[in-house]
Length: 93
Ligand code: FES
Image (cartoon, rainbow, N blue to C red; front, side, top):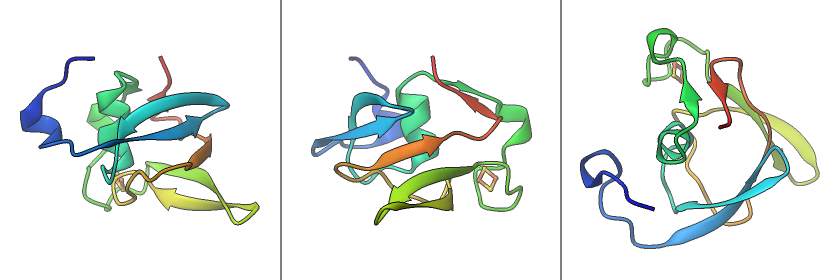
């Protein structure tokens, strides 16, 4: 996959994460909102602030067997992360 270095910086390694039961390889330690951009998901740019103010990027990740709500613009990708629910502002492609 080709990517824009200006958007994602130097990618040192990729990790496997799951989004809605599908597995993806994405850059490690990248904000999830950028991960969705990397994956070419549909992002409602007009409604998202990208700086933790609007609160419209909450998604649910699986943490220690339970779900936890986190902000996509403030949470970084890591190996084996499982995203169980996306916000209405982001659609998988
Ligand atoms: S994009 Fe606004 S809080 Fe995350």
